[in-house]
Length: 251
Image 1 (tube, rainbow, N blue to C red):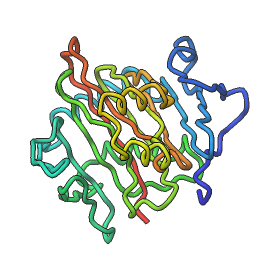
Image 2: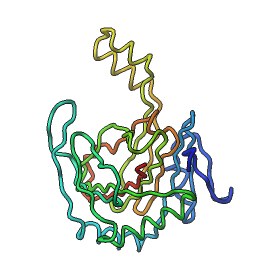
Image 3: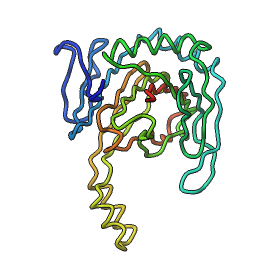
Image 4: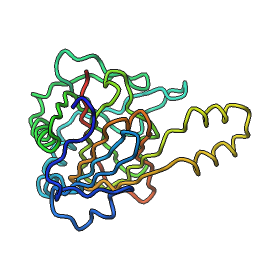
């Protein structure tokens, strides 16, 4: 999809919302979509019940036991530390290498993991015009596993990447916040005390939160990676495993 905007099905299948769709989607039938317009060409699609409950547990068991997970060392703010979640990477042949936080994951073949090809096909059917060719998997073993604020804005994805995220297992919060404007960044670099900078950022940035359920699909599209950051924050009371699949297209 050249514009990066979502092409959706019948209007009756869509619930438009200016905020998080997690609460309004609790009692929906399967395949109901919640569309959140973030403004300025950024958009999120949320399908809380994308894959059936039974099939989702089947995929979860396969992924948890059959994927050769690793927990690599990455570099963040010039410091090396172990990534706070397990990871695995699949990509079609001939694509440029993915590198993030100083780490280049080994690209495995789709053919070696048929269930992942099945999920890819379901995602393509749900998002008309999509053509994902790579997949980054993450496994969060408990509430101390997380991913910090970041954007998937690597150049190999292009200016308006579409990223589809399928979740299995424990429910976790997915949070989006608006990136600070260049003007706000410039002001924060003019010597303001750190406590005032953080207060301004936390109060000034618009946020959206989604509860990613077992078998759900969330899609970020348009300029979301340019203008927004997202994270899976720590949760002290979480003890169960969550597995997340993020489908991407490398140009």
